[in-house]
Image (cartoon, rainbow, N blue to C red; front, side, top):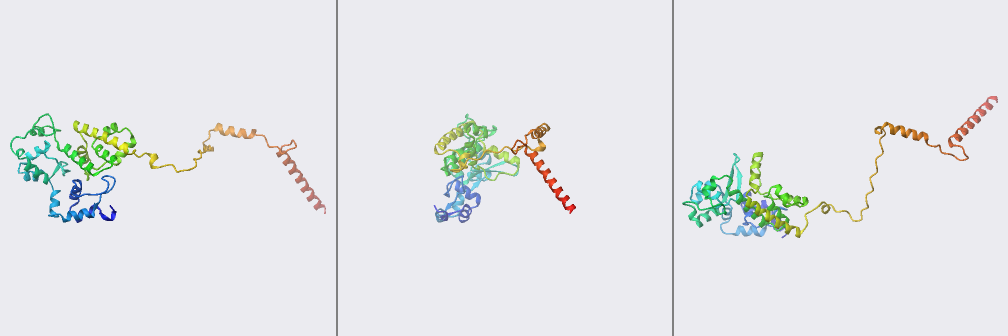
Length: 337
């Protein structure tokens, strides 16, 4: 696909009459097909895909309805149940959120696809009234009401993480990217245990996806979001560890993780670097005994000889004396004249 035949995400969203959040969700759910790497680059939309969606019946309302999200109150109205029952169904794992955000009180607000809620209400009418059955997640047999009363038994974070990872895996064909997607929900200690090679860990961290774009600015908000991004259930952790081990085996067979020698190769035929010269000792930093020893050594050095058995210095002194005598004699003779 040529670049000229594709559109950037912003331009495609504009032509499809979708807001930014709606467009992102539409691409994640596969309603808008994109091209390009899932993590390594910005994804683009083919011009033919935009035209296909624009020619679809009910455009643009039908497309926008497929990505419409609702909270607890609106979702309960769609299903014609109370908000309390809606929350119990969601906590028990019957309703899977597709997004979340933090409100101004740093409370987590889960969002659900309106299309899925309507489908659930029409397909499972027995769960909308009466006593709720046992949880569908294979727990210890507690009812949904019991799940709500127990701290840490909320299935919404786990189900959201599983759904988000599944959508990202569907977008990527690169084996190292797929390993990074699964490893993104494991805490650093577990990741270091499964991936002892520091270069492989660096590669996974570089490809690590942003599971929840638009992090809050406060420290407390970031900590709350980080808890939602990290797997905490033993069964969930075991599942992701096994998945990461298998994906890493595939990635290593495909290619090796980048290393320093790979990124900065040695030039062919380059001369070997000369060994570094030892710096000369600084006179002012030399210890006193060293300076005195050097002076003594200079005094003890033999004076070079100029031949004929006499030292050169002695011969120069004799010659300089003869020149002086000749000059004095010349001055004296001139005075007599």
